[in-house]
Each structure stands twice: as structure tokens, then as C-alpha cells.
Length: 394
Image (tube, one colour):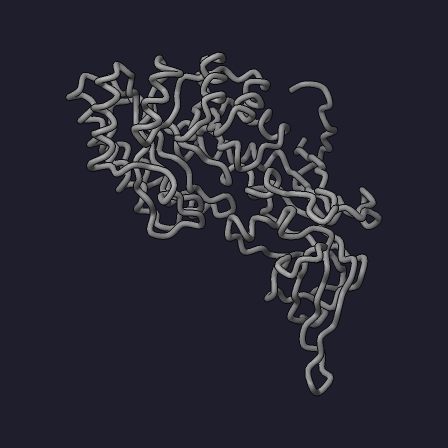
């Protein structure tokens, strides 16, 4: 990575957020802060290699484009799923070869295609005839990967309304069109949806991919790449293990020939659990019922849904909170409503958490905040974005 590499703090055994707060003087910080555990990313990489040994991960940069995380994953040998010219620049700047990148946005601006061509990023997805004609004109020697629709019945963020063609009708028509234009179709891809909860969706999609590979053979294509997309959980390793079992069984059934390279596009899997967001209470309000009894405590934090908590609006995330009071277990709990700092009434973080009666100046931590937070946050209303402290096990 280029100049300006941030400091990495080292710890033994296990990262203690409470100790970080005490030793780093975070009580005096007005700005929210991300605590990033790089060793968590490394642990996820080892878990992936153990449970999905044949599937090579291509990290979805859009999930979290922190250059420190991207460089770490580059050093670990992952591939990368990029969606734009700037994401390509970031990854290529980490000394990643173009063969380790898939340009996985099916609808790309011409200038972005030209940048990919200039830097020999040949693999890219396509899902409609207009993009095929665009590729024919601007990047005719690229490798077309036909993206078809095969969504899970349950997912945090379904993608099928925007991307993917019909696997039974449109995909074959696109392959025929590509053939007539002398373009190369080298594989297929799908995405069951970000945060997939219907585990069987992977088997259903991999079976469809096999049928398209057979059709490609009839057309004379030497198809050798299957991209099974994303959807892998970032904070539930038990669920990931179940998905892995289904994927491994399906791959063995439908793609036993190991000459076919199989990749995936995990994003939240690598980074969700690596980040804890530390926020300060800068104001509070107590709401009492008609009898004068405390009913709800409102807290106003220094980060909100226009900042890091945009994941609530855009990623449908349900956040959990941690407090750092020594006597926490002995204190009564109250219904707590948590607001962000802006003047917008939509800036509500949570309304159903149970917390002790905290004070202005106390800190609240939010775990699993590494996915679809950092790259989407904005300084709306003039509030600063969180900085990041990096930690790594010795």
C-alpha cells in the first residue's frame, strides 16, 4: 500500500474493547471510533480455506473498501470483486494481478470498461444484450461471464430485481448473441442475495449453472469459471458451516471436473465481525408514564443512520449494543431508544434495546459493524465520520 500507512496496535490472546477504551483515553473523544481487529479477518480467511477449499474467495470491495483491509486480503492471496473504476484502482494499487479480479458489475460505464481494458482486467459479468453490444464495441477480447438470476427466498438484500437474466431463456439467448459477435463466454455467475438465509438456494443455483455450461459446450465455448456470488454470513460461523456443506456437495455433484475454477464473492463474511463501533452519549432524555415511573430512556449518540448506521437503512441490519460499566450486571435494565446526532427524525438507531440507565459521556459499543458501513457513511449535518484504530494479535 502507498504512503500514509496507519499504525497497527498489537495485543496478546484476545482483543478487549474495554481495555482499549481504558488505555487509549477514548472517554475524552467526541468523535465516534471504529475498532478494527485485523486478526478477525485472518481467522475468517483460515475458516474459508478449511470449509470451502475448492472455492476461491474474491472479496467484494463494495462491502468495506478500507485500504488497510483490502491490502491485508491481498497479502492473504484472495481475489477481488470490483464494481467500478475506483475499486479497480484501489485493488490494483495493492499489487494484485488483473487475473485476481472480476469486474462483477453487469452494467458498467464505458470509461470504466476502458480502464479495465487498459489494465487487462478481462473477467466481467454481463446479463443483457445491450451490455454485450457495448462489450463488442469497447472490450471485445474480454471474458464474458453470464450472470443469471437465482435468488434465495430469504435474504437481507435481494438483488434479482436489478441484476441477473432468466437462466432458462435469456441466458442461452445471450450466449448465442455473444457467439454471433465472436465474443468469448468463459463462465456463468449468480448471486443468491446478500445475507442469504435460505441455504438451499446455493444448490438450486449451481444446478442451473451446470445446465448453462452444457449449453456452452454445444456452442463450442470452453467455459472454465463458475462464480457462486456472495450471501455468506459474517457473524454466524455455524450458519456458514451449513452453507459450506451444501456448496461442497453441489459442486462435487455438478462440477466434479477440477479444471473448472470456482470462485465466490464474500463481503460481509470477512469484515462484519472485525469492526466494533464505539459511540459516546452526548445527550439523554427520560420518558415517564402517567404515574411518573421511568418508561423509556432516550440516548443521542455521535453517530447515526446517515453515518455508520446506514446499514440499518440499506442493509436491514439489526444492531446490538454493549456498555462498559463495571457494575453492569447488578443494574436494572430499561427500554432504551437510541438516536443519531442529526436533526432528522429518521435518524433512529434502535428503539427496543435494554440498557442500564446510562449517563451523558458514557460509551456504547456496537459489534459486527464492518459490513456496508464505512464506504456508505456520509458527514450529513456536518457530523464527522468515525476514524479507525487497527489491532492485530501478536
